[in-house]
Length: 142
Image (cartoon, rainbow, N blue to C red; front, side, top):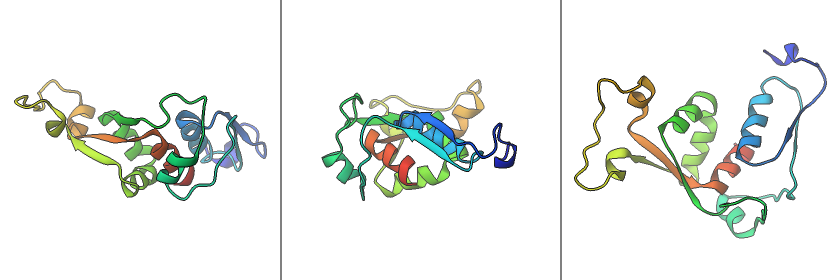
């Protein structure tokens, strides 16, 4: 569906919540609507970097806002397929892509198996590690 084929041309898409899921939904909807409005309880803070957001952005209703997060290969695949600019932005702000062999306990060999799903085979090399703030920053400013 293109913007011209939107269910109600001229009307905005409205997303409730400016967290990871809400911002991802807004970015996808922006491909089909000329205007997307994100309703968020917390005041939007202008920020130049994830570090600045980490130090100054208060989001009391968001659990684990300042914790590090790791996403497995499937999320990396989704970012590659739908948001390559966000993945590039995450790399720019210091996200690490960690090989599974590097993350596995010493002595454990991580090798693909013949019965692995194709998605696992194509993405078994890395997981993505970053803070939740970095992902939100990259979705907002990508």
